[in-house]
Length: 407
Length: 222
Image (cartoon, rainbow over all chains, first blue to last red; front, top):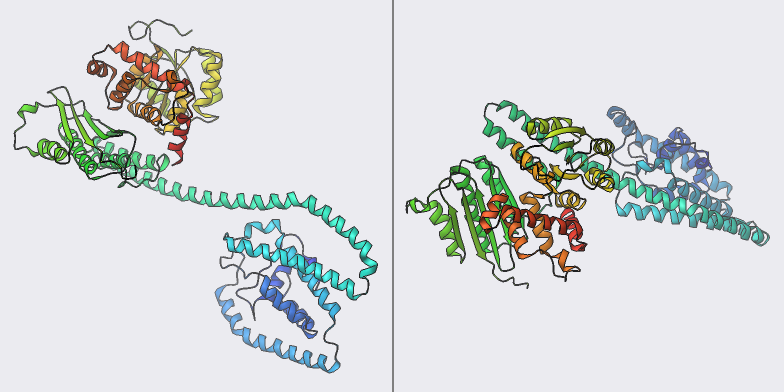
């Protein structure tokens, strides 16, 4: 059982085989780890099994060694071979079982099953194997699982490995009647070990930190890549559309604005819920009007507060005012300013366009009177419209805030 | 050099260096500005910007916020240390509070977004080159927001608080009013409006209120 020590740099990490296993995949995994034929490991384990040790080794490995992950970048046997091998599995298993029974019977006949010394040797070797497998920086990138559970499990395994080595070594010495003689040597060894631990601790901590960093980096890169793909795709679409609609400047501008807004919200904005507070709601209303009518609307909003019924009405009135400005003012820009004061919310919708004579608006035109002034007044607010032909228009909306129940 | 005579009153046109890492955008701006300004240099990153500006000593630098090599703030830091008379107008696609407040606190006398029309940009350049401040509606909104969020007593009332008049001016600018319209609305002269805006700019740059930086960071984080 000194195979693990003979490993060279860069073999695959020790996993239990998933596809080519007979029982729990211990031997196939071990074989792949060591780069030898599984038959060899199977026979070796079988030979050890005769003394009972092999069985212990096997069970321990089943317990401690993780199953090979499903997403496997190693050249897996092609599907056909796998099926064939699976077909062969049972017969192979039976053959090995028969062999084991045969050897077992022979050994029972000739006695000498349990030698405690051997058990302790096994403990020590197993512990060493586990430690080897844990501290394997070159293979860190293959630690596919990032879950906390797996992390804890690996800690557990490391601890168990150390424990096994200590028990094995101590037991070996004790049964050799050498514990007394070795005491001086032991304290020397412990001192050395402690020294090494002190030296190695920063390195180990560094390794752990590096791994965490790598993991975070990987997640971040993945997110970034997804976002980039998303953005690039939508930008490409917009560019294509712009080329196809090149003869229609208004449409081109609309497309460009829609894309610009999308990019901005990805780059700069917080993912706020448009339904809950004033600023994102106002921005969304403006975006919708802009999309529908193709006139850029610049929104500036100061302060923020939750939306209540009155503010919802004011937002609808503001939308109406934006629609009017976009449709009738004949301008290429509308300015919207929202301000949340302690006791009221103000919206200003302004354009530098044609303007109109307020007195000449026929009483039956519902736009301004009904959906702006009327709506505001019904909810306890007020609306003021400043305009004159050629002077542009500014709609001022004022809505008192209902006292916040939270304070 | 930084002549103190007014560019707005005609005569000389301001000498301008354009700093932007997008070459296409630089030539676009150059074309749009036409004869309104004299473009004496261009740069695409922080180091070349600093050397071009030191060499040319322009009246005004059009400065992009995002630049390879440390950003517009780094250009401001290195140039203003040696040539405090050179004026900066920040020009950016970003309207993130952090960028806007950052570059203005770094010493820029104005902030406009790149969607601005050529004519408006030219007048903003003349205004800043004359020593005034140029606030876009968005910058005005940010400033109002930053100075409004004050529950704690200000450490320096002179710097940490806006006067009633300054707030009125800023609110009109945020509503999309031009300086001339602000002046008409408040029955004051354009010059007075400019004075108010410059005073707000000074407060914005000098105030140590940590609400200000905290506010900008919070806007970035959430």
